Every structure is written in C-alpha cells, then in structure tokens.
Image 1: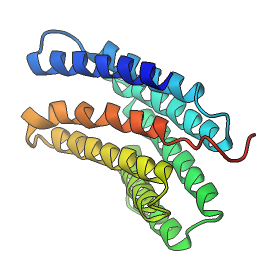
Image 2: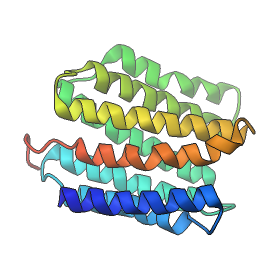
Image 3: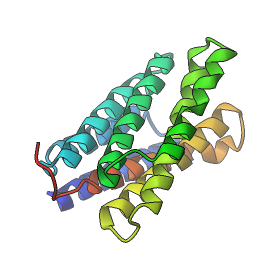
Length: 205
C-alpha cells in the first residue's frame, strides 16, 4: 500500500509540476486529487491514536485546500482550517511528549495579540497559523530526533514552512517565477511525509 501511494502521488506530482512549468493546462484538479490521495492514504494508515490524529489533520487540510485552490474562494476559511490542522499536529506532539511544552505554548499564542490592533481575519489567522507551524516543526525536530516518526514529521513540517514562505513571497510579488512553482514543489512532498510519520504502534482508540 505504501509503494502504491508513493507511486500514485509521485505521478500526480510530476504531471502537475509539468503543467505548471509549461502552462500547458489547469493543474488545480490534479493538485487537489493528490491531496485527497494523501488523506485516503492516512485513512488507510495505522489504526493508532496517532494515526487517527494524522488522518484527521489531513482531512482538514484537504478541506482547506478546497477553498484555497478555487479562484476567489474563501481564503480566510481556508487558513482557519489550516489553523485546526496545526492544532491537531500540536496534539500529536503533546501525546509524544506526554505533556505540553509550556514555553512553546506561550509562543504559539503570541500571534493572538494581533487581535488588539485589527479585526481583519487574515491578519490574525496567518501569523497564528505560521507561528504554530514553526513551533511544531521545531518541537518535532528536537524531541527524540532519533525516532523515525519524529524525523519524518519534522521534515514534513519544514517542507510545509518552505511552501508557505513561497506563498507569502508570491503574494508580495517576490521571485514570482520560482515561488509560483515552489509552493506546490514543497507542499505535496510535505503532505506525503506527514502521512508516513504516523506511529504504527501505540495507543489504539
């Protein structure tokens, strides 16, 4: 099943990157199909608590992508759903550690201070999402780095951070020739690695 997943996702990845590079067609349906494939792979993954949290997070990510891939879509709702994804990733890390990392929790909540200055949803959601993504990536990298699942999870989150940096740069009009491609160059691999990071042993719900 793992080989089948990696092969199918790799083919979709190659085709939509080709379409993006050559502008030969609309790649959005293939991109969304690849994300749904990651969700399906997570659903068929380990039946552990960690596996279920991973599948749930990828389900919310698929819903978020549905809004973000549609031109003129509900971007605030898409980013809000990605905030839920990060909350679920945080829950994975709490289970791994056996408790909350208090200093990191304080850092995760700092972006909420933006609410004091603006009521613009994206101005609050984007910093909240990205700060939690970076915190989760650092926690996964630093906590039991010898463990395979932790290394994979950290790698997936760092790839996702690279994707989001490309998204931000593209929206600011910076290096658009690369960032237009770069966001999905990093995004699908990040989701694939996160799928593979689910613990195959542990608590069974």
